[in-house]
Image 1 (cartoon, rainbow, N blue to C red):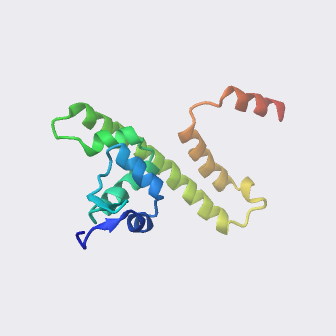
Image 2: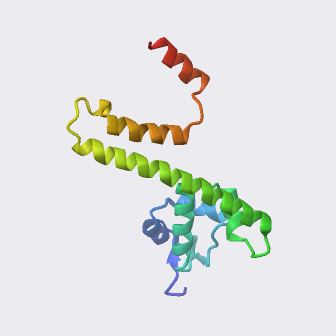
Length: 149
């Protein structure tokens, strides 16, 4: 066995992913083993970089199918590039919402207004987060709002 190869347990430990997740990503074609050492899969160390990309993209909302297409993309794939631009735009919106939420939480952490949730600055920031993330209340939300009055 090549001394630089990592067995599945070491890759799982370093990537903080379960071995079952590694086998799933392998089955979906997102990663590939270098071979086996007995019954255990082995991987080249660069699989850790691929897994870091997969983990980051999954946390940003990419599906496994989207990742599969992205990892096999070529510069000539215009449809995929259009989809990547749309995904980047959606991430920009999410980053904006999360930034406003973070800022409102930091304000609340030092605000002296009683109660904190009635602070005009906090309400304004939270309102921006809510209005950016939802266009209109759902029927259930509207019904609950009407019954609480």
